[in-house]
Length: 209
Image 1 (tube, rainbow, N blue to C red):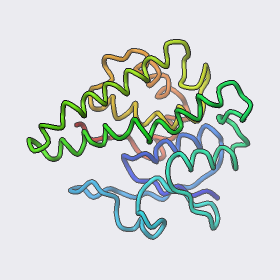
Image 2 (cartoon, helix red, strand yellow):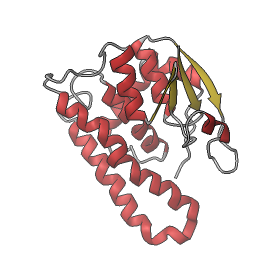
Image 3 (spheres, rainbow, N blue to C red):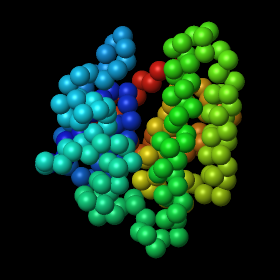
């Protein structure tokens, strides 16, 4: 049985969503962020040395990192569903967006979060951070000009990986200038599997910065 070690208000929501889309049975162990620091509880270090979420266990195997988890689940338990084959026309695009989510897009949003916590001390950095967030969102918006999803006209694992960026951008009010991204997020939120993931894992109540 797959166990999702699920931290509230975190990237692990997309792992629950993926499992619901795949129809793969799983169980959830819930963890709560510290109300003051917003950090994960120390109990997660008993599962993985980094003490972060998402992380899953599948028998004796422990898998961390969103992209690795999504690839593992789709290939090992999903029989390739939502993951293009190596000879598929959209394989390269799918690979790009799987890596783009955490390799490029997430960094400026994290910096924006930390800058907000620092207050006026981070003022010199804010124009650059805001510029980078806008740059990445505009790039994502442009990618949807000719297709409904990031890697084509149907949902793939790349959209699940990218979904957390959309949620963070929407929560912070930065998605308003991008109608295609808004439309994609609305369609994602309307999916029954997405709704089931929220019911089981709890709502996404992300910090506004």
